[in-house]
Every structure is written in structure tokens, then in C-alpha cells.
Length: 532
Image (cartoon, rainbow, N blue to C red; front, top):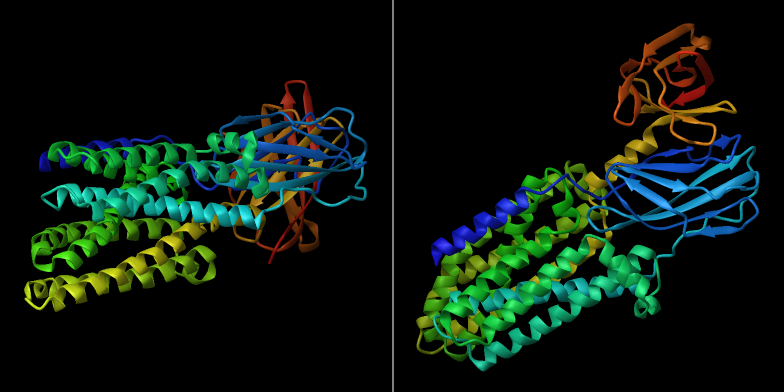
């Protein structure tokens, strides 16, 4: 059986580590036309570029006359999202609202405002409202799912591998209830995920749209693996054959790890060969530990002396489980938080601090149980059993609080996911155009230092253009800095100039010379401002 466990873990980790490209909590890094820009003609498309691939959920446009154009067609290609613009838009300010889902299954929404001809008044920015009731229900469903997976499936594994006999009815009943709770929560959370993705109220849960939206996110993989884990655990719990109980318990525990590794902030982070196996090991370790608490307390309360062998076996295995989940947790925290300053400066970091404090308390109780209370089970007066039960109950309470905190991470993007949006906001950009040609120039970072310039060229209607050469020219006449001319190199998305050093903050004149073909050359001019 030990060889079977090792083989199962090796195959699972190989499957997780061999995943495809890294998907994370996406952020918009560029729009074309750019937010706030004025174009002369109605663009054929609006191109949005994210830092990771996304899938469109809902896209609408409110034109200058206040009319809403819903259900716009959008083509997703890697990090690019090309949105078809309705023809014949009136001159004035247009508000494009988008809602997409990222690789970790979480929705991202925003707006891009551009004007045709000249800016005009706007009736406000439309967008999906966040429903507190829907988000509260999603949090409760997540916590209930965690209870089913960790306490329910973990409890079945404990009764199959640590206890040498089938569980009694007093142990089987609460485990059955937890498995049923987890199954209900798994199904409901798919629809609630769709509500959150679309920004719909809780009353819309009975409609088909949120369920379809939830299915289109990566969260459906988590739900599928979770349901498989709960079903296999249920079969193993009610079977009297030891081999079948052990096989079901082992496979169910593996599916718990797979379930949490299939979606979410942690598993979607790069490098996935590291993060997905880390999430898997962390989840399996948590299920082994938390799953033992309820059956352990019931066994010790009923017969302390007879429970001593099972307690010792669990305690020995817990050393390995705690080491694995601690190491995996540290790896994931380092990937997600990236710097100590983010621990206190972000909501994600603050939740992590609170969780770490509770986990430290849990580890303290586990050490107390192993070093002092376990040996006291053999006392004839039963006092050792009562003290151990009280300690285990305290562990259960702390575990519930930890799971509640972990559920909050669904709504708190990690710091590493916030950086692309922050970098995009910190960049300086200029939108240059003539009636027939446009160029979006982005300088990152938008302050005096070594800068990378990115240039995207398009037609006057925002259709892609593939020029033969692009040259960037920057100057600052008020400081006596003459033209700084750099030939741009072709990049995966547009043209780039690396190692550009602009020594002063303030406005700079920018010119982009474009060799469209052997017979046509264009020069677009404007200005860009660097922050101090």
C-alpha cells in the first residue's frame, strides 16, 4: 500500500507539474484606442491587451447619445481581445464596458473611454454591480466545500488508513453529513461563481446565464474534481471491505489535492510546475490533518485507552503532513506576496497574517497533544482522554476560523496579480494619429530612468497595420535636449525600443516615423509627460 501511495502521488504531481502556460489573475495593460483618447473615425475594433489570456463574459458599449449596444462580438487570441465596434457610432464620447474571466477563474471588469471627433458629455460609466448577497453566498459555499473536502474526505481517509476497523455509526454519521454538505456546496458554488463573474444579484441564481458563465471559467475543473472526491469518499465510508475502503480513501484524498490545484490564485501563478504541485501537497496535508479531528475526538471520548494506537499512528503521519503543508504554504506565500511590504499593505497579505497566527495556534495545540496529552490516554481515570478531547475541539474551532479566512482570498487578488495593473497605470503613453494612421506609444515606467518604449501601429479605424520599419524620436526643446532617435525592433505585439534613457521629467515631444511600405511613409507627432 505504501508503494501505491507513492506511485499515486508521483503520477499526480507529474500531471500537475506538466501543465501548460501560466495563467494568473489577469489585468488590462493596454487598450487601442487608449483610454481617454480622441480618434477621427469610428474604429472597426477596440483591442484590449491583458497580461494573461482571458475569455469574454459580457461586453457592451454606451455611445455618445446614451444608447447601449450589448452583446458585442469579441475574439480572444492569447492575451488579446478584439471587440467589434458597431458601425455608424455618433461623434462624441463612447464608453466600452468589459467583463472577462482570467485563467484562475476570477472575473475582471473595467471600462475604456474614447471619443470620436471630440469629447462629449457622458451619462456615467455603466458596469456590473457587485452584489454583496451573492458574494456572501459564494463565500459560504466555498467554506462549506472546504469542510466537505478537508473534514469529510480527510475523515474518510483517516478511518480507512489510520483506524484498523470500519467506522462506527457515531463516526460515520457526521462524516456522511460533511460529504453531503460538500457535494451541495460544490454544485451551488458553480452557479454562484457565475453570478460573481457576471455581476448579477443572488435572485438570478435560478437563471441559466450564471451557470453557463460559471461553467466557462476554470472553476468547473475544481467542482468536477471535488464531486469525484466526495463521491469516492462516500463509497469508501459505507463499504465494509478494508481494501476497497483504503482505495476509495486514497483516490478521494488525491482528488482533493487536484480539485484545489485546478483553479484559483495560488495554482494559477507562475511557475506552474512549482505552484500546482505545491497547492496539491498543501491541500492533501490539510485534509489529512483536519480530517482526523472529528473522528479522533469521537473515538477518544468513547474509549480513550483503545484509541491510543490510532492516535499514535495519526500523530506519526501528521509529522510528515505538517512538514509538507508548511513547506508548500511557504512556497505559495513567497510566490503570491513577493515582498514583505505586501504583507501589511494589501488585503491579501493581511488575511495571510491572520491565517498564519491561527495556524501557529493550531501547531501549538498539535504539539501539546503529541508531547503530553497522547501519553495521558492510558490513565485509568480517563482524565487524559477528556483533556485531549478538549484540545481537539479547540483545533476544530481554529480550523473553522482558518477555512473562513481562506474563503476571503476569493475576493482579494494577491500582490503578484496586482503588479501588471500597477505597471500599466504607472506607464506614460501618447496616442498619435492622422486621418489614416494611428500609433500608441507607451513608455514603461513613466519616469526618468531606463525606459522600454512600445509602439502599436493601426489604421485610422484601428485595424492592424504591419509596417516595414518604425522609428521613435524623442526631444525636449525646453531643456536643450535634441532629438533622441532609435530604430524600433519588431516584437511579438508591436514594436519595441529597449534601454531608452530619458533624464528629465516633464513633457517630451514624441514623433513616430512609419515606413508603411516601399512607397508610403508617415510621421505622427505628439507629446508625452514623464512623472518625477
